[in-house]
Length: 392
Ligand SMILES: Cc1cc2nc3c(=O)[nH]c(=O)nc-3n(C[C@H](O)[C@H](O)[C@H](O)COP(=O)(O)OP(=O)(O)OC[C@H]3O[C@@H](n4cnc5c(N)ncnc54)[C@H](O)[C@@H]3O)c2cc1C
Image 1: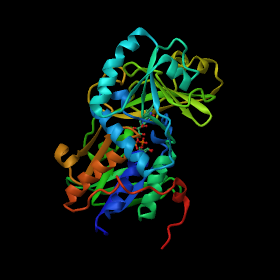
Image 2: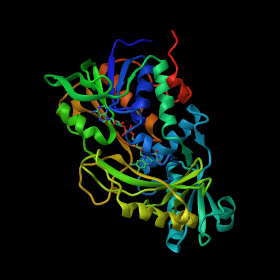
Image 3: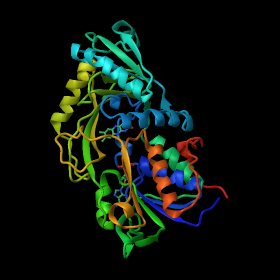
Image 4: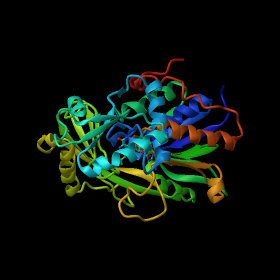
């Protein structure tokens, strides 16, 4: 069913990818603009951990529930995109052991299956774990390719008629009185500036959301919170390894092909284009990662990089772990009295589809059309279909 409404999505990360797919399936005419290459923001630069939600099960249960639900849906709609390797939350100290019951209960509250393993059972699964470890809890984490999964959404959207324009930057939001009616965009290929009209504009620019909202004269409480990741050569675990403790620095190791990715840290910045790569954070990844798997301390360096989380919160806090990892969708008519624009922010790569569903529901409601979500069931095309010509 074709709907005679045009939606402009700004931002070609995982959230924009899932959203353009959702809107195209519902029958909207949809255009997505991304200032750089697709997934060149945060989405293409995370660890690649398909979260079970275990990491958030004690302190941030809303986010944990979103993760486990989307973890299961993504496995269904994007088969072959994940290493279904599970994760271990590993106790090294007596304090970690004391955290076990809280962790297992938190997981049970959120519907995350767990299995408590003895030291011997865990070491049999992962022989490189710290031999002083005391026990581990197994959860359905996984490894994903943070570029290929969003590209499957883009591919399917493109073949369903979406117009996807990378290297196209929004330089101005167009308003008619108190209604947003489109955007002025600059092509970084031709240098040309053009206008794109829209019935609804969705700001899906993650850590950059505040910049777009300022152009529109609305406010979103997004706090860009960067973190550092380090990849070392060698696959020092086959499962995702986490510390059995409240989320902290350097407490995740994700196997990615023949590498191990150690992450991460957390701080706040005002400018997501200038993150830097603090050397002490890189060193901390070796040290903290080495507490989980000693061999990573001496493993050859492959790469280190940083990326910014789009966390939601007004407060200026200390480190970045105080804010929830859940997502929020703002209808700026309700929030700021400006119609025609919606912002989606927060969340995780893992929750991209759920974020898109919530946002598309707001779009549908604003336009007063009946177009239900279908993305829970429709199996995505392979990532390489994005580069194929659309037939017919
Ligand atoms: C250190 C770290 C580790 C993480 N690890 C994981 C993990 O292992 N698993 C997981 O599930 N999640 C993880 N996350 C979270 C996840 O990466 C993010 O939640 C997700 O990538 C956000 O995607 P997004 O599409 O909302 O934002 P982005 O990917 O940042 O997309 C926004 C896009 O908007 C574009 N843009 C900005 N301004 C404009 C403009 N004016 N015009 C056009 N385009 C514009 C940007 O170029 C960008 O590509 C991690 C995050 C961090 C920071």
